[in-house]
Amino acid sequence: MTSFPFYRKAHTTPASMPTNLLLLLLFGVRVLAICPPMCTCSRGHRVVDCSARGLAILPDSLQHNIHFLNLSHNRLQDLDGLLNHFDHLRTLDISYNHLHHLPVGLPRALWDIRASGNYIRQLEKNNTAYHWNLQKLDLSLNLLERVVFINNTLSNLQALNLSHNTFWTVPTNMPHNLEMVDLSHNYLLQILPGSLDRLPKLSIFYLHANHFTSLSDGVFGRLDGLQLLTLGDNPWRGFLLLTTKTAGNTHKAGGNRKQSAPALFENTAELALKSQ
Ligand SMILES: *[C@@H]1O[C@H](CO)[C@@H](O)[C@H](O)[C@H]1NC(C)=O
Ligand SMILES: *[C@@H]1O[C@H](CO)[C@@H](O)[C@H](O)[C@H]1NC(C)=O
Ligand SMILES: *[C@@H]1O[C@H](CO)[C@@H](O)[C@H](O)[C@H]1NC(C)=O
Ligand SMILES: *[C@@H]1O[C@H](CO)[C@@H](O)[C@H](O)[C@H]1NC(C)=O
Image (cartoon, rainbow, N blue to C red; front, side, top):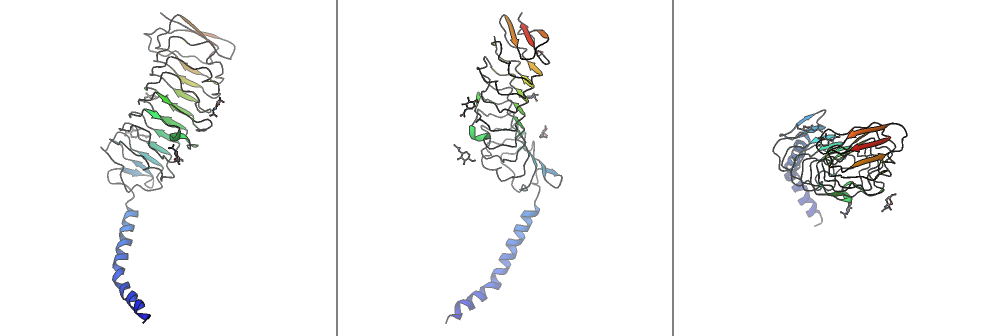
């Protein structure tokens, strides 16, 4: 009596074998499909270029161990939760798409995120809280009015491009190891006290093409590493004198509103900008 189930089982095994074989084949085929047909891949298919392919959705069959993924110049609207399993991804280019926010769940291995030319309005705290490896973040040409950084996050971030957005004030709490910040082509009117107090490595700071009329002396005083500051193409009113820590030369430059060429100062000691 008890042998009956075994008999039945033994009997079904040969019948299920072709199914197993089929599954194995399907799985095998899926593993072999390492480069999505609409993309080009190189370096062992770990460098993937899917740019300008008219994509509205993420191609499937992307290898899980890719290093580099270029999805720029497509029509992608939402990548939330779709990229987090690419644990080896170092460079992600999602610029010039239709994204309204930075995708949720970007891989933590990323070094370089390029997301310019989208419709991103806000950078949430959570977007960047876990990206210890990130060195470059490009959010230029978006609709950002403010960004919120959590203290002591993004500790490896060196370059932050926020140009061509809609900022009114320089973001506070910027990551402390930044070397380059581009805030040109915004609506900046003011720099809140303390915003620039803890950026010892900042050496290149673009503030040209904004709406500044004045700045309080000393606002750049703690930027010990400053080598290049651009302040041109702002509607400066009257005479502006800005002092930085380094003693020495005085630089004078025309800062009237018609001048589009940025003012350039190297190791600024005193910076004088005269309007009109
Ligand atoms: C991605 O592709 C675009 C268009 O081909 C190119 O301009 C861009 O430089 C590429 N991004 C990266 C990170 O190489
Ligand atoms: C922030 O991200 C973490 C990890 O990705 C997640 O567990 C958490 O729920 C998120 N919090 C919010 C407020 O989105
Ligand atoms: C920042 O982005 C803008 C627009 O994408 C670009 O023109 C500019 O060169 C970038 N700035 C730097 C310092 O790379
Ligand atoms: C972040 O750091 C600033 C400057 O040290 C400090 O004033 C502020 O209280 C900190 N914020 C939090 C939430 O820890």
